[in-house]
Length: 117
Image 1 (cartoon, one colour):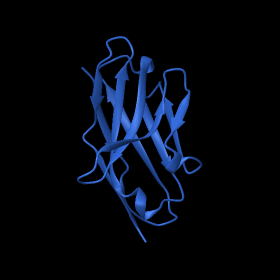
Image 2 (cartoon, helix red, strand yellow; image 1 turned 90 degrees about the vertical axis):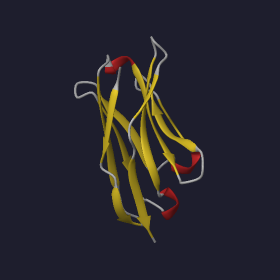
Image 3 (cartoon, one colour; image 1 turned 135 degrees about the vertical axis):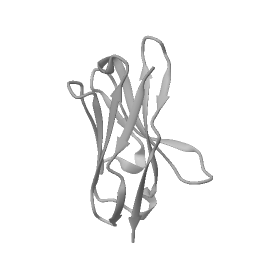
């Protein structure tokens, strides 16, 4: 069983920055593929960024060049650095872990990010 706890959300003006953190416990973190997703009320949950166990990354086109995902295996934590934020980035952001051995998928409780214009 994996537990994921997000932090770092909040209210920021357009053009500002936030860094989200997701602390994981309960499994071998270093083998997990980790990701950030976001969801606006009434819409589907969409991929923002993912980072594999070997550090390779991929991003949604809408955040390329503005967001950076990273991981610290020693701290069992994955980060999402968000720069040049736009009002359309407003959403609840969820941390995701995929265990590449068991193939189980886990979600955090979500953290609200609000970008004012």
